[in-house]
Length: 374
Image 1 (tube, rainbow, N blue to C red):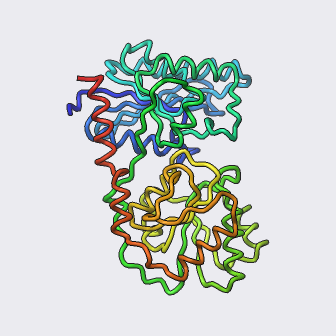
Image 2: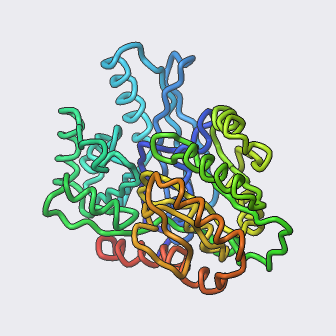
Image 3: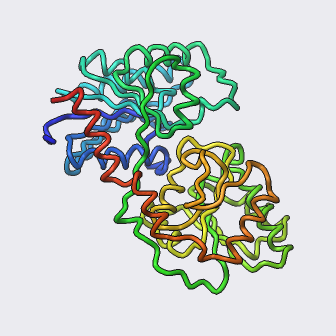
């Protein structure tokens, strides 16, 4: 595939110096596409201290990142004006776009639509967000409904990162076809775990610890129950966000002596923790994808997970599925792994995960792109 093909990536979420982990999956996908294409990323960023718009550029290989920094604005209207001005100034630096890929509709879907008007090229809209789940009641504002309706009309392709997200999106996008292209995992970086030789069963959890979706307190309660059962174990929790409140909760549940809190970490820094774990634990109420599950499976590490994201259907090959908010069931599954940590075939788990490998996902993107770009 020719590297002359130019892809413009826009996203509602993208890493910034103040929020280095926000939308890092979009950054990684840009890096994946840059193996075969010329990629430009335009990211508008509100900065409180800014008085005027400034464009920062960073070029690395086939990736050109344009950060349009702008004043934050004091009202809804002024915030919108500043963002529009920053977008327009940034877009003037970009020419000859062959394809636009817009990640996460809200709140920046208007940028996807405006870019399509300017470049008159195909627009792929890919969703990662959780705001389509039924628990939200699908309560969108008038403007959000309008943007989603326009996206439905203007997008050449609508893409979800998982089957469960596709199903949720169908409630909004009606009869429109929604394709599924998953997020990817670097199979070389997330290599097969060496043979584990833990004296004490080791468990791992990685997340933002958001209480609305990740249910970290449920994990703590289940491990507290496991401790009361007299089972030996150690849990490592890795998070990009402040974990103090969950540490305090672990203390109140008298299980803090069995848990180590670590983070934030870069993507590559998490690999040794997967390698050392006997099982990965996910107790979320909702996931649109869950990259940590794919990473776990790629290293051959079994999972104990609720049926969310890519674990929405039970697969006994890769681990155990537990009911949402069922602390007792999670504890029993933890005990099962603790008492028999080598009961899963790590090579078979990794083989299952290869459908999320860089090579496989890049090939899926290539097949779709070639339908629109020569």
